[in-house]
Image (cartoon, rainbow, N blue to C red; front, top):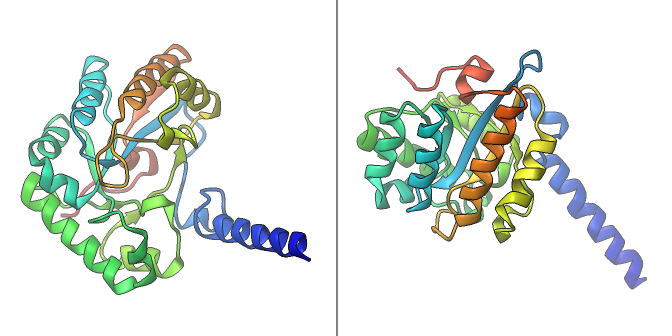
Length: 238
């Protein structure tokens, strides 16, 4: 009986993940995790920052290779590192909304999450002079009511595929890059994290993974674009 209960619980958890968090769920049309597969292009994206010195190190890598990426910023992190958020935009990268606090509990109170999104929009506009038209929910949570709320706010929800599922544990950067390269297909939206849940954290191996992934994909003939270019949507609100 205990084993049966445990299996049932695992099945329920798996079903919940599939419906509400997996980028491959049936609702992915409303929360796209890839673009058209007809060109050898990939959109490189970064979540949970800005987070120093790692965001700046990633920006240096991108600049050296003349690549533009998309950064989904956490509002509180932008308040901590406004100069880095401004550098992201000034360098020609695209900036999106990734909530204010990156706390899971806000999902249980939809109005609280809406307030976080609204406040983050104001922070990003004040710091950079741009108001994002792209948003990504933390953990790729795809609750239909939240996605509808984002659209009412003039935001396009954008998912993606994690470069490595265990990036949070900061595995070897070379190992993470190997996995990211292997899963990339024409039109992929790859997710790396320059921060951790909006709390900072050591992302040194992520920096290595980003460099190795970019060089590996360039060698395979890929071209890098921003999410708005890949999906044909606006980067910023008018």
